[in-house]
Length: 526
Image (cartoon, rainbow, N blue to C red; front, side, top):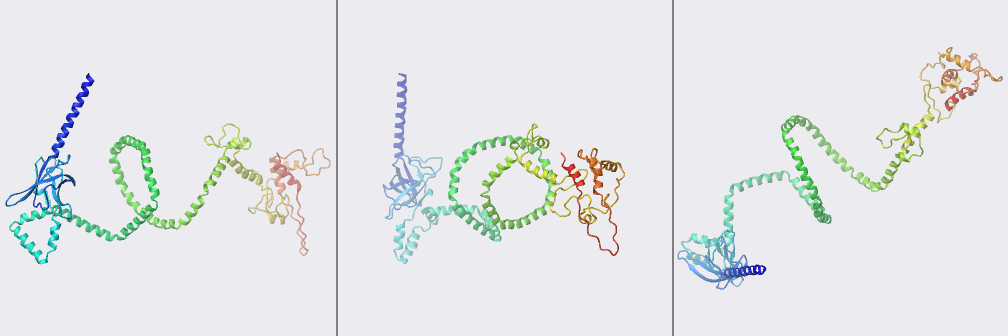
């Protein structure tokens, strides 16, 4: 029962609303308005009454009011629902409906807060009457004399002594005249602004005249830009198509940016607190900036030259770009090769020398334990290092080049060279060479005694000549140091030849195998 009561109440409310709407609608249909015109020419009873260009009703009656200033009052009735809502500032005018002389009333509702009541009037100040085009055409068909008579005689006689009424009627005769008058009034109130605008426009035109080359270039570049944009319209359309998705993906980042701005608030407060010190810093920076101005000017001048150089290098850049297209195909194998050659895990075999010379901890090629071998890069450099040590032994005794590219009489190792061979092949760095050009200062010393003792016949060998070394072992470095002065001692000078005798033939170049064997035993001994 309670549910049935609720349903009945809802139905009653709906019925009351429908009845009220019907009553309101019917009332709206019967709403009438009075509209005052200076001239109601062309209007007829039952003619169209439109609101905002839409037919809302019809004109029902006409009457003339006033003696000194007569007005035509047109009564219009709303016959369509929903149009009875004219405001107090509504404006109405008479418009031609066709070329055969039919006219109708058209009103704009207005924007006032107060509505025009039923039977309300639109004053003549808010109306306008059109100039009938058919009457104008009829007058134009008359001769010029009759035209002038009609204008001066009829119109002058009709409005004699009423210039104000004539002026107001002409203003209301066509909306364009009224709007022109309002425009002139607005311009009159803005005379100072217009004057300042003209002054500024003259200044702007002067600046444009002084920089007309820049304006021309701007127009030309704008045309080129528009042409380029038109050629890329497909890409631009694709960019606009992707823009919504981009904005959707950008939203989380913008939210994060908002959080960042909130987090920056304390920093900005601190910056505001330090603004005085910053102002002092900028003030002191001013002389530095003044001193730096010439440098920036010179940099600008250099940029002009640099721009020309860059333009001249466009062809080389295009060539590099063309060559760079194949660079990825080479870069990938090159990267793999360089990574492999510097990988300790790809060593050929373990080598304790690699652990002794590896980089410190932190480097990717560091050997954590004592195992590991040389990387490929280290093996390459080790080759050059060990090859140099192989061909160029160097110690505290001397420096010997074991490999000679040029082979001649000076290439062999000589322990007892002749004077002529010494003169041709020596590389002495001065006139004094102990044991060669001057006496050996170590003769008679303990080293010389050791050499003499070592050069005695070997024990247990009857056929060993004097001066030979017993092959019982490799000489020590100290013994070799005492042996070298004797090996390098120059031979005794031969007796001077007779004054008139022919010079003797040069002695054959001999090679002392004993000294060479001793030196090679020392150098190549394990």
